[in-house]
Length: 379
Image 1 (cartoon, rainbow, N blue to C red):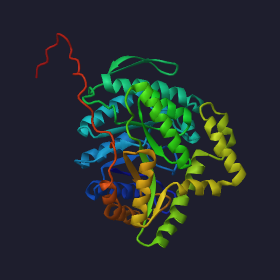
Image 2: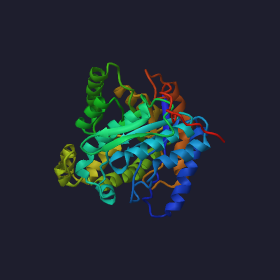
Image 3: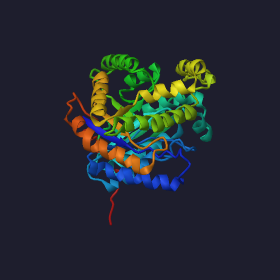
């Protein structure tokens, strides 16, 4: 099974400057390839200390230049905050710089503070995501971007460097609502699962997605990828303490950042699904919902963590997992121990765990880039 590592760039403790957090996270990212991880990922977030990663592609380019083997993936690029042309250019360029190691992750976003900061209407996110995704997926296959939709009117323009490899099978999207999952099947995109609901519900939705994807595309979808927070320690009591302190701290930060408690979020077109979450919080309180989110993650001894991750893989037929090891105000040295122990004692079991299909690799060569007809270039 494919095993990835995600940098996270949280600054929750208030004990470090942003620059210090960056030095720490970059040092951990530098360990990913020598530790044996198969890929390095990063999410996109802006304006707060929740996650300080405003330019995922720039970070992944830095990783690609310092490594030889690991794939580099976005978890995710939030499309309503991007110009589709620029995003296509950036990813075609990253794919060339990394020699085909890029994995594109797409999503539509949920943080109101980020939509406000970008002067973008949150109510338009689903429409923009649909238009932008269609345009981007087609552009990275054909080398030209053009679209005439409700939220994007794009005249035909060439993507240079011209995409030299297909992104089919290595484009994923983070989808939470059933409507978004259905859309991914329509667009022919794989799923990146970031746990926010009971696993039984997720499993049922993945099964429906697979059936719909096969019906629409005539072939099975890429195996999904699961992203999870990990706390591992040889001492079960210490692993539980890491859960209680750092995983719960992260979960509370997610509740606050996304304002899951705001019952008005369900009045925003495209976010009706979150009515159930906000009403649940109103009824049972933030602490209970934060604990629910935390308990979807993985903690324990190395054997316990390996067994739980293999169980998650089997439930959804995942091709791989992405682990987050530094979060919730965890001290830098403890985060490194967490990641190192996982690499030494858990990852070998996961690598030996057989799956039907893995995480997307570079596809076949695309069409040859056009030349300027009748033009002779001399040097």
